[in-house]
Amino acid sequence: MLYVKNLNLQAGDFKVPDTSFDVKKGEYYFLLGESGSGKSLILEAIAGIQKIKSGEVWVNNLNITHLPMHQRRVGLVFQSLALFPHLTVMDNIAFPLQRRGIKWPQVEKEVVQMAQRLSIAHVLKRKPGTLSGGEHQRVALARTLIMKPDMLLLDEPLSSLDILLKEEMVELLRELHQQGQTILHVTHDYRVVGSLANRISIIQKGILLQTGTPQEIASNPKCKLASRLVV
Amino acid sequence: MNHRLNRFSILFMLAGGLVLLFVIAPLVGLFLQTSGVSIVKTLHDHEVTHSILLTLTTAMGATLIFSLGIIPLAWLMAHHQFRGKRIIHGLIDLPVVIPHTAAGIALLSVFSDQSLLGSGASFFGLSFVGTSAGIVIAMAFVSLPFLFNAARDSFESIDKRLEHAAMNLGASQMQTFFRVSLPLAKNGIISGMIMMFARGMSEFGAVVIIAYYPMITPVMIFDRFASFGLEASRPIALIFIVIALAVFVLIRLITRKSFAVR
Image (tube, rainbow over all chains, first blue to last red; front, top):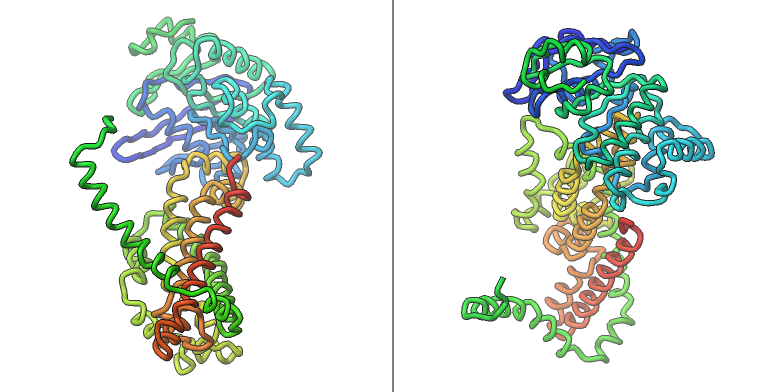
């Protein structure tokens, strides 16, 4: 599904040197690392936001390294969620479908279905500025999922949620995964990883230290963060 | 914060009050010294009404036509780092610092019928000297920094992640510009357009060099003052100020209603 091959990235003085990993179809894969470890940089490189110095990114046997951002079909949910403040929730979720030239009645039907699936149908006419934290998260997720991305990229989507909302979102992500969605999730929160992950890579200062299933990593931790993993 | 008046506040209020008085006094004086009869008479002067209409339409024309180039340039300057960017900034701000009569002379050397550009344009039946097209060019030259700077600041203030999100969701750069960047920057751009329009409308120096005729109102005020004195020019000045303020307020109201972020 996703193959990151010998990726070299640089942002200012910070470097991600020669990084390789792969995410299989239907897999829930975590990049676990502390703040500033380079995990978001890798995610942005896959999405086409961050310039790749060298290396390749493949999705579904297609080399997307040099594809423009809008042609990559990898859906990124930003840490800041990046909902368009000037559009209603309905228009936010409809955005990817409208860009593909789909006619409004069909767009509306799909948006309503997606909103019902994520329990946000009641906020469709509202602007993002009026939503609660949990609703924000769900709208951002709905907007990305409606484009049926080959790969869902999640950049710390749970970091700003309180404990109850976090549990709710974890359940939602588990459900999405069970429905077959391939997910690459970056986080520093080792507590949510164990119950969701098929595989995990631990990243520190831009370097992948350890990759394996939660059980493999927990039984043979190679760093402090890995030793804290709850399986 | 303590809002009680102390010596410091009173001193600053006095200094600020003097500046406000300096701005308001001439306007009040103009109102008080202009008779109603002369205003009515001036309003029936077709040369004056035609001149006001010409001033409004050319200023609007300059703003609308040049915004088609200024807004994309402002976007580029807000989004890209490149060698020579500071020089472009300086060039755009140049009309603010050079004397406007000098700007008129500079424009004349490029747009006169004898110049390369002017003669090229005249081949297509377009002349800039002594025409409305010349007025538009002169107004745009001196007023475009107002729109450019406002638009660039607005584009710069947009969270780049919103534009990245749009492209990640399948929008091309063009779609991202029209669906995300432009709507989010619109308030600043509209303010800039209003400022450009207002500045263009009040231009005298550059216009008088390139197109004394047809006469825009600032040129007509000068012309009547030089030919017939204060009494003849004062009612035109008063009417023009009132109309300029009315148009300014009207545009603000319309744009606020139409473009308010709900």
